[in-house]
Length: 119
View 1 (cartoon, rainbow, N blue to C red):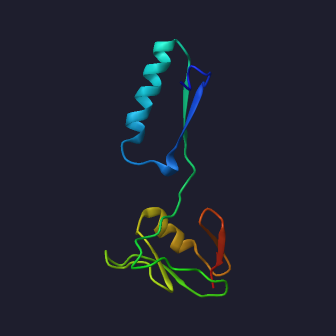
View 2 (view 1 turned 180 degrees about the vertical axis):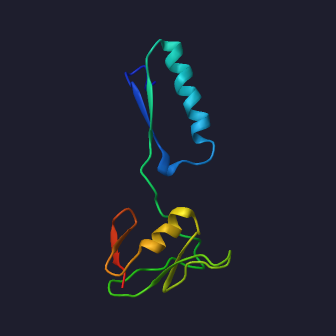
């Protein structure tokens, strides 16, 4: 329907991709564009690294202005987020973030809705 309505480019958001999404959608876009004789482009939107936190140990952890909390890489599979500590899975990008997090640097959380300062 979108191609029939005139869509000539589809943006695939790589930030929110789940396994198999693109492998399912991309061939469909190509198939229907070919059937309709339309030139349709596909744009892969690569936002850049987005840092993902680990699992919660229990209830959500509220962040209160003025609180001091620790950011760290998960030490093992049981190192979950808990009050006072936010953990991240030890990926290449997140390890680089930890090395770059120097005193005075601001980190944005929740797509920029919150800002924390490294002390």
